[in-house]
Length: 530
Image 1 (cartoon, rainbow, N blue to C red):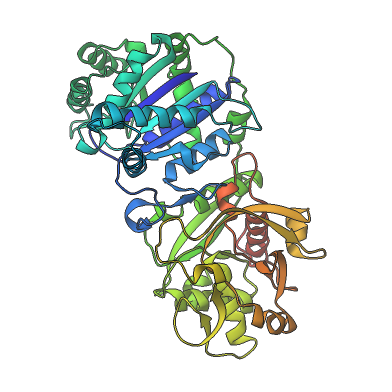
Image 2: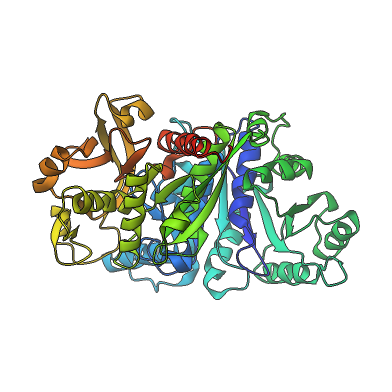
């Protein structure tokens, strides 16, 4: 097993996750089996209870793990399925060590950061690295992204564990990549001092980078690379420029041009292989059309919906159609705004705020024959909208939202839950798809498996009335409704599950493919081109 550890310096938000995923893509394109681990130094056990407006999207894995959004990038770039074990947090590590102490596993020893916490970190990395992630194949290379910024107190035990790993492993089995910022001053000169200080902080933790990836709005030149090389003791060829690009899927191509694959092959004693060009051909595919999708949301932060953005991009690329997103405030949406988009999407979410605006957007889509895609909460609100404005049940609502006729009710097993973390219906569940439906047309199979994250369902006592009025439940998991659609509408489909989590650049979600295709047809019918 080879390990590539990725750390970050100067500031957060530099793109360590995309850099890590891109390194993995470069290696995978050369035929290596790759896995990835994300270390998050927060005390939370997982990302499930964290505010997405502050932390970004909560990505759900097939085993139900609620994890950092970077694991979504790993899955998309590497086309693999990861597990909850691939996300290591301070909370998980300390909980495990304390549980061992309570059982008496340490035989009376004084439990300390070194060696007990660092040993558990190393053991967690190895367990995750050895898990099969790609059709039963064992990985040969494990990427380990250390979250946070070098110098943060929260990251110190993890950096110490990495330092110990460098001593435990042969030199050719571990490489350290440091991602850092190279800003440009008002005169247009690239400044290397932040990188120098960042590497100094890394050295104070006992670590010397093998490769430095510099981030900035523009690429750095040879003179800047030479300066970084001299001050940071890395070969000039190991100073890799990673300028900001319009599409994250272009990053592996840029790192290829910078020679990162050759540097890694030399450092890890890997065989030199030519890359499979299929990824790069896919990324460079030209668009011949364009659509605008309105996403109706209460959050004004795009990171909350990264997987939806990427799933739309995957579908658009497959259809040679550029998908532009218009973020619509759920509390201020109106017919004028909705009339300017080619399709309406209501994503997952929680809580009452913005729900009425989302319901009005769904009504606009249903009555105006605008393509509609609802996801999770967007599925539940579509049922509520139908009950209110087709069945005439004005007080139809969800048990989550308050008093009224609860056409959406809490799942029976959720009624006795007394804590929040990891207690929703999470991860993969099998779903049966009905013949003669839009869902069957899109999915092409009677049985699918999709990822979930919810506490509420369509109330069984109202299913008959809803179907009698024309709403079709075209997918179900046992007695739980999973997909609804409206016959005769150009495209009106909503899913209780989250198809965006399983969408991949080369394997777009069929649900998103159908939606983008419908948006394109709607745009053409409206005379807006596309």
